[in-house]
Image (cartoon, rainbow, N blue to C red; front, side):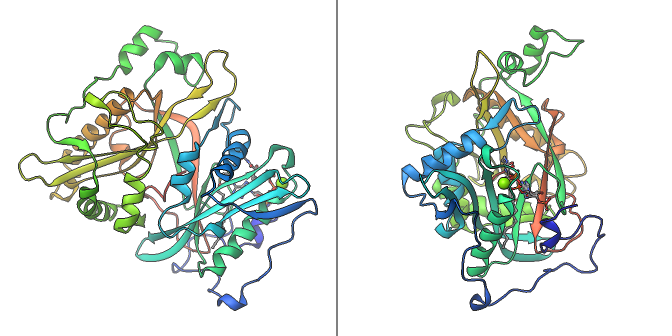
Length: 415
Ligand code: YNC
Ligand code: MG
């Protein structure tokens, strides 16, 4: 039983599919929304975090770095970088009021956080404005005191004040009620390191040397001399068109404006010159975005993106940072060709472009490349030697009823 979630406008577990898609609670006019923040236990106070202030970004970074999501074995913990948080939490139209902190009154130490950013979502045939809720975190010393429900209610109140009554969020835990559940897949790049830190193991019928050979990647992408290049400002209109059309393949996807695409794909590129001959990476680079431009027509036919999200390695004497890349959005115009999804043409192209993403990630010294079982990922995961992991990610909608969704896109910005 879920004492808190039973009180919330979400489908309850085992409820069965609704007769019709739509909200659970109707929207409320601004003046009817609760005007005062929810009460906190007496030693704590609310604090809206100013992410334009590097000191405050650092405070969020420190909180998450020590207290955020770990794997089931407490071996790895996400280490979102300051530049990642800036990218994720300041998209076009963001509200600073949705960056909600809790501090200890006496010494002002930040001990909890939750955030929302605006997003437009299409779920089946409905489009609605929502908030994407992420980075819910309570300091390890304050766990199991029912602080999380207070944070959730407070961010909900602040969304309501902006006229937003729906939300999307993901979590490893199962609560009422997932609309979709995806599994993490991992493509080993640095075999030796991943074995050293016990992220992966040498299977019984294998040797380390064979495993290294099996995962070896070329140093130059397949499309290196056939129109592959970094995405640029001028590509955004074509990328947007490709994105919007490709996303129709899925039951749910974010709807992005040109400005939002620009933010998602081209901010967070880091500093310094682009890597030469596909080797290395920029300093503080968060997102990698590439297009395939037809050399004759100059049309953008494909694009793919991935982002960097390292994890702290908690129990290795040799290494303390796992450099992980995560597949983000991609699209191919091959999917618009009659019959291409059925006769293998789309599959082949996806294997080629995501294969190039792996090569670029490897040249940028990532240790592992992760992807979820969403979008068209099942078309290439096996062929490209990804292996299923033990992590799952559940997708949720707040105050929106719809039957479980098979075949979703990336649900928003980032997990
Ligand atoms: C979770 N991840 O079930 P019941 S994901 C939602 N998402 O309630 P307490 C969660 N609810 O079951 P703790 C949740 N985890 O009794 C727990 N809950 O109804 C529920 N971990 O609260 C739980 N970050 O304060 C239970 O638990 C109640 O002290 C228990 O705190 C939980 O960002 C947490 O995994 C997660 O920092 C803060 O364990 C803490 O354990 C922690 O006693 C490590 O809470 C980091 C971590 C979660 C990452 C994420 C998405 C969050 C979505 C929240 C829901 C948003 C709803 C939409 C709001 C906007 C609406 C509009 C408009
Ligand atoms: Mg608590």
